Length: 116
Picture 1: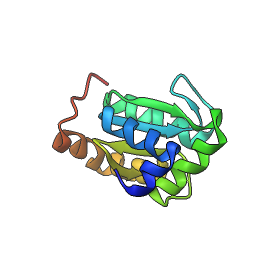
Picture 2: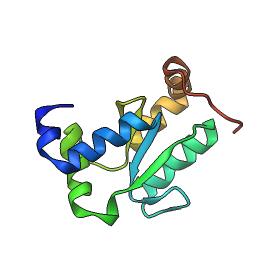
Picture 3: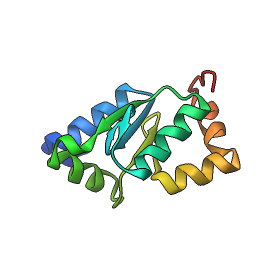
């Protein structure tokens, strides 16, 4: 954990969340009820490949919504993490999925994919 994360409770929460779960999607809404098209697309892709993931609704807390952007220095939401590593937003996730790279990354990181 960085000094900044230790000093910032939002960054500490983000760091702990990505450390505790293999696949985390910081998103607008929930996996069952996405509140934007980009979050919905990311959920659909993760569901399609059978990736077990935790969705974190950034709309519940403005500090979290801004904190997730500064945590990665990435300006948009959703944001996908696999085994603690930031992967990207919905465009990157879509491109990786279409190229077969998302599934390969999950396999490489040891994430067990279920049935799609």
